[in-house]
Length: 630
Image (tube, rainbow, N blue to C red; front, side, top):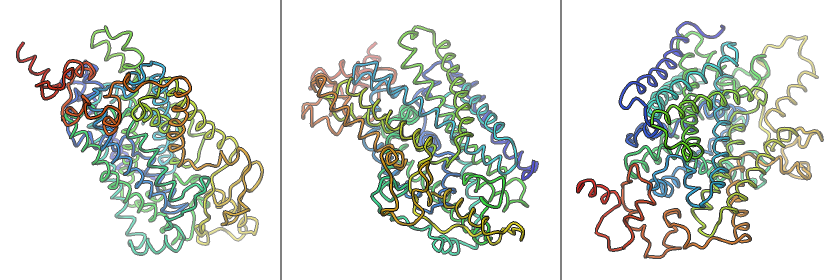
């Protein structure tokens, strides 16, 4: 297999072996994963570092590493500004969402929806979207590194998908949440090592940071303040910052992987810091990966040869970084293997989080109400079986991605926004508006979910794309075309191909929509074409706002719920005083750093806060005092 030597396979094999070994270890120690509490929540006794790093790599995978490079190579550094939006989303989650969720003692995030709206229908709608979004993300996270393996080695894409799926399913199914968290820590270290190894060598071959910066600037790829308000422009400052903030708030605030990690922490303070630490953690990955994209562009610009036009095996920007690594480390055995381990670390961590989280959702929301009387070993065996089934489904989605094609970041964020947006809107509808009822919740979530999937599928079927401001193409004068092959038609074909692939020239069944740098009259869309051309960066925002709007209107039409009929613990902490006044029973406990492990919070509230002058400091203190007196 071209490109890799024995040392590369050894390094790559160590990653797979260590991931599997951690799963085996946690299947044999401690409680040996015999209870759902240990298997799904690690007994709610995990430390700050594994929770923080696991939360980070659950959402930052090979999609980021390969996708950033492709975006910056083709379009410029504006995509890095999504990190500003992500940081805003992380901060809001730690500030407002962690203290909201922690006391509820949740295993499945959708338990909240059922309790708040007193409706299984709302919970089912939410869990369906959560499961669908998770499995779709698994597929893209597995597909991304597999394309890199194929580009570097010629190793079959389907085989890479199969190996990654089997390994992640194996250690997740036998090791439970503890194995997921600690493999995530190990895989984060591998990712950092691989990224910085490539970064160091890349800066050397590209002529240093100053040369890289100047080359990218001269190529018109340093523009970040694209203030175009048109939502059909693929990447603008507004879209990559505000749009991504909405989308990623949906991910961090409502995703099952996030809720589980918040629940595994020992205290509210620890859970909050685990979330906040994702901001520096994110920057430790995204800044060097952004530099890698700039370095790859500089390298091939200096060679005056665009691999996407000169290399038959490179048919997507998603494969650019892997080709670059194989070329600059050709004489350094083992480093290409480390790079592949880096990519697959991201895939394995994302897959394991989704599988364990999906098992929690399916057990808690669908089967536990009917089979909760089963002994612990049987309940755990069932959840392990669910992990395997979800792993197979994620693998099938990865195979489907082979036929879809396109930038992995856009594939991921398009479907992610189509599910994360409506989900976040559903949770916010319940947490912000006590008069919202279950009918409005279902109507809001389903309408926004349906619209966004319609847009996603419609854009794919019709081939309508969002507009990308044109940039200078990477030169091809150094590609050593033979005299016989260099003709006017070939050059014209290259330019058309490049412009289309970068989005500077958009093609539909109606012909060319735009072949200029102008956003003026030449850029015309009609009817549904405008809807299909909306940038994927706005999907999360549309999902949240449409869910809230439709949810409130339908609730008012069908008869709003009176705020006094909604338990105040289901309203976001900052709004409780607004609706319940200074007499709120929750004010004292909001300051507490405890949860009552093993008890449903509303039961604790009924026991403790019947009288405001209770002498018990917190529900947990009362529970402890009862045990002591017994």
